[in-house]
Amino acid sequence: MYPSSTFDQLRTAIADFSVHSEDPKAAIVPSYISYQGSQFITQSIFYDGPTPPPGTFDNFSSIPTILSDLKTRSYLDMVLSAPANTTMGLR
Image 1 (cartoon, rainbow, N blue to C red):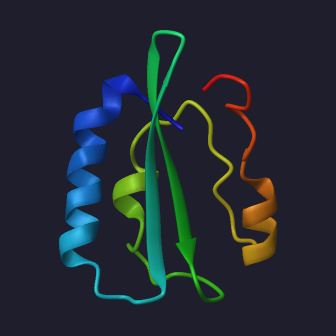
Image 2: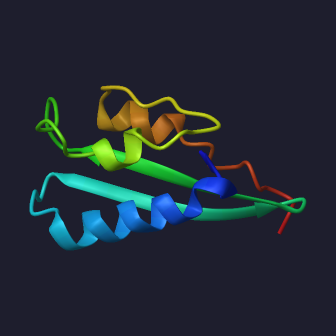
């Protein structure tokens, strides 16, 4: 989760990844969140293999976060770790 102060860096990193990433195993899913007057971007990063090649996600890992649980894990573990119901009752 990234603070609003990093939005320009994130937009650049997202655009760079979208244009230059040619690895079909690498994926990102950015999400914009506005909650009680605060704005955040969450970034799901996934590599469909044991480990990504060096530099694959450096543009994202170099930006300061509010919260991060970036680590190597199975796809199932990543899906189960997602806070799927964090906005329940707020929409």
